[in-house]
Image 1: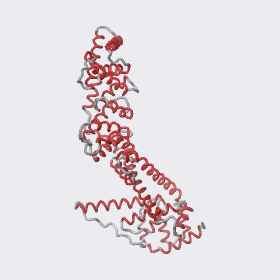
Image 2: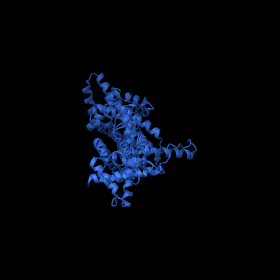
Image 3: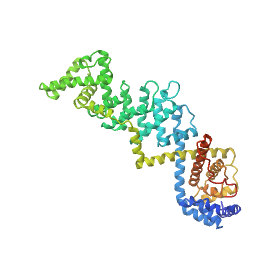
Image 4: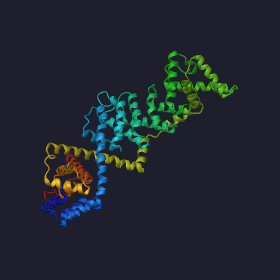
Length: 497
């Protein structure tokens, strides 16, 4: 393309729209605040009737920043596409179609809990696997709305504690699976908070401890009790804490089945946690008696091991380590049961609220809130761009391109702005749609901003925000709860901007 000819042609187009006057400068105040003021500069240059060569020079001076910002926006769009693709599992588990609307709705839910869309998606994918069948329907333990609240609050609590939200999904799902009948979200969160507090006081990192709770709970143990047993057994079986607890529980179950546990304080009809404590107290009492009789601790342990083998109780090494070294020594002798039971009893009722408030006040919490809001904004803009793409395709606009649009694309290519013709058309279409929603016509400022992908998205964010406020005012007025809708500006007729 002959750039000089294109510039001259564009000059003629600019001259035809020169009725802008002072309105152009007034409509560009925001753009004048930063180096992203290309739209304002373009309007000022047209107003002053300077040559388009000056426009080209101005554009080249800030093209570097535009390119950097454009790269970021394009990456964000790709991330939205990836998010929508990854949402397929969540959509399937929820029985919903995986559309842009669904993805955007999930992003908005995530923002409500200060989570990024990807964090909420990862949590939901895990949570729905464990709890999906427990939510909704006539026999659901939680309604759909309660399920959303429960999932979001658990994920937010994990994040506020410095843990990847998805790590807590299995425990949250297991709590719901184990519960009987309709449940209350507050009660579930209290149980989860107590379990969390007990594990946090133990020696095993929460990111490793939380996923092991569901296996222990599978033996008929409540979440708080499972956390207590896990924390007690941890020092005796480092790296294999959950395995040690499960081994001890299997030994208890075997004693009951065979009727060999009565000698050690375990009888049928006792709960699993109660049985473990009874066995541990019996073994510890025997050991203390042997030591008092003159044996060393090691001699006493050897005698107890031989006795258990003779009676056919806890013959497996793992079972014996869990019951004797873990619960007998650390649970009873060293006071593990009393300590962790006290921690559970003293767990604050507002643990969740405390964690959330502390996190939101932190620098990371404030940044995450911004990131969550940005995730929704990016999803909304990406959805609008896809709608514009469909409209342009159906209208054959990509094949029939007016000369002036080709000229604009030529200038963009030469200056480092939006040189891709298809992108430039998409920019104009999304801006036109956003303006139409507000009953407005597009302006020369809109035309100028459409030449940059980043400035177009900035303008879209602006217009979406204004339209959202208008919609809220309309809803309030319809309900009779709001004040009269203020007229902030007169709708702009075509050709006056």
